Amino acid sequence: MTDKVLSTPAHVEPVVFTRDQLDWLPWLEPMAEQDLTARHMAGLVDAARAKSPYFRLLARDPEVLEARTRTDKDIFYNPEAGLPRAERELAAAATSRYNGCIYCASVHARFAATYSKRVDDVDHLLAEGVGVNLDARWNAIVAASVALTSTPIAFGPEHIDGLRKVGLDEASIVDVINAASFFNWANRLMLSLGEPAAAGKG
Amino acid sequence: MTDVIDTLAAIAPGSPLDAVRNMRPQARLQAQASHDSLFEPVSEADANKLERFAIACFVAGLHEQPQIAAFYGKGLVPAEAPAMLQAAIGAAVAAAKVAGPYGRYRKGPLSIEDQTGPVHRIAAPTREVLGPRLAAAFEHAHMLVFHPRDSAPSYLQALIDAGWSTTGIVVISQLVAFLSYQIRVVAGLRVLNARPA
Image (cartoon, rainbow over all chains, first blue to last red; front, side):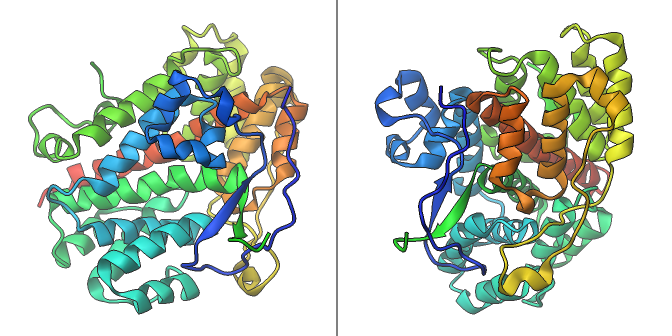
C-alpha cells in the first residue's frame, strides 16, 4: 500500500510571497501516470495535468476533481460580463495572501499582474499583506475577499456597498464572491497536501 | 434537480440573483456536481457517507452556520448515524470554535506575521462517541478551517495512524476545502440577496 507520508527531496522553501514560478512537492503519493484510467483522465480535464503531482494526487477522487476544475475554469475564465479577469485574479491572490498560501498566491499574483499590468500594486499586496493601500477599487475587492475568507465569515452589507461604490455591478460582485470563495477551497488543498519549493533549486 | 447553494442562500428561480448566477452556468452546475460527488460518492471504500456528513456538520458548525449545519445534519439520518453522534458533533463544535485564519510561516521574514492559536484536540468523551477515525478527521478539519498555513506532514500522519487511506485523506481534504467554498458562496449571496441595489 502507498498509505504513508512522503519525505520530500532536498529543496529550497520559499519564505516570502513571490510572483516567481514555484514547484509543489506532495506529502502523499500521487497516482502513477501509468495507472491513470479513462476515469482519472476525465477527472484531470486537461490531459497535460497528468504531468502534475498535485493533480495526480487529487485524481484519487476523479469525480470531485473534475467538477472542481470545471467550477474553477468558469469562475476565472468565462469572459462574459462581470469582473475583468485581472480583478478575479486579484481576489484569488488576496485570499491566498490572507490564508498564507505562498504557492497559490504566486500563481494568481502573476495572473493579476499580467492582466492588470499593475505589477507594483500586486507586489505591494504580496509584500505588505492584505492591509495594503492600492486604490479605492482594488482596496474594496481585497477587503471583501478578506472578510469572506475570515472564519467566522465577516462579510456584510458594508462590503457590498463598498464594491458598488467603486463601480461593481451585481455580476461583478458575484464574481468577487465566487473567486474569493473558490480560493478558500484551493488554498486548503495546496497548503495541506504538500509544500512549495523554489523552482529548479531542489 | 436541487441546487444546494440556491437552497441555502434562498435564491428563488427567476429572481435577479438567479439570473446573475446563470451568467456563470458551469460554475453553478459544477459546484453542485462537486457537492453530489462528495455526498453521493461512486465509492464509499475510503470514506463512507456517515463520515462525510458528520464532517460536514462539524465544518458548518465551526463556521457558525447553524442552518447549513442542520442541512448536513439531515444527511446523518439516512446514513444511519447512531443517536449519540449528533450530540457528540454539537459538543465537538462548541468546544472547537476560534477565529481564523491564524498560523505560522516557515522561519523567515514572514515570521513577524505569525499568529498563534490552538491545535485542537477532541475531548475524551466526544472522542469515545466519534471513534478514532472521525476524531482524527475532526481534528484535521479544525486545522484546515482555522489555521491551514500550519499544515505539516505530521497532520497527515495522524490521519493515517487513525486508519485513513491516502485516497481517504484526499476525499476528506476535498470535502473540508469544498465546504469552505460552498459556505462562503452561500454567506456572500445571502448578504447580496438582502441588499438589493
